[in-house]
Amino acid sequence: MQSDATLFVVATPIGNLADMVPRAVDILQSVSVIAAEDTRHSRRLLDHFNIATRCVAYHDHSRAEDLAQLLARLAAGENIALISDAGTPLMSDPGYRLVDAALSAGYRVTPIPGACAAVAALSAAGMPTDRFTFEGFLPARGPARRQRLEELAGDVRTLIFYEAPHRLQETLDDMVAVFGAGRLAVLARELTKLHETIRRLPLGELRDWVASDANQRRGECVLIVHGATGSADLGAEAERTLRVLLEELPVKQAAALAARLTGARKNELYQLALGWKEE
Ligand code: SAM
Image (cartoon, rainbow, N blue to C red; front, side, top):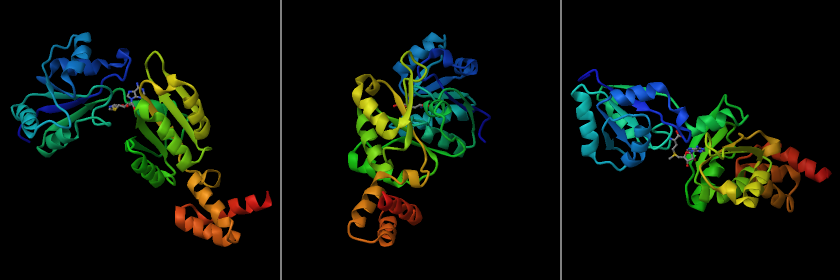
């Protein structure tokens, strides 16, 4: 290690300023410089807490020289801090390269934990938390987004997504098409703010509810989707494939082929097809 300086990775509020933790204020007041995603944005927060420390811009498009200057401060024995516009840095926010470089160069990196929209939403979603996956933002374009969702359709872990409000409706449409209308989901909107809304419904109902109320397509949101649970939740794609194949083939063959085509479990498709036949 070239010095015993520390890079502090400091979480800031995701809406409600009262969520700023006292240790974050102390650290931000004490470091020599704060690397911020957007210095003008963060200045308002820092002023609110009487933090006069100098801010420098640091984001995913920062030049190698900017990174080198921050590392040079650590080399000179100065403690520095990293913040993003809101919540925990690196969580769908800049900072990865800086933290990686600081660790690689042998400096101490210390997190100052605080708000994170994904964890806040998960804690109030009433979904299994023993295993979950944070997917961040889905691809913005339809075909790539659907492909990513298809890759996740059989995942048994709780799925957490960030989504922009103007894409929420089409993302919910795609989720219904790929995961099936019955899969349980939670929309957590404007967490910690005045219009905080947390709604838990099967995906089909959640999509319709969002479609019927433009207010639900405003502000910031997290989507949480229950992991795959088996026959009740094979996914719309698998069910559609099975129905088409059943028009031409006996149950056993249709289930086997649908399983190969969609990745769903053969036995579950077989049981589902038998159920349809009985109906
Ligand atoms: N680093 C942040 C964190 O720790 O949550 C996330 C930054 S990411 C650029 C911004 C996204 O986080 C938003 O588009 C939204 O999906 C989610 N988000 C941030 N604040 C939120 C809030 N108050 N309520 C719901 N979602 C929020």
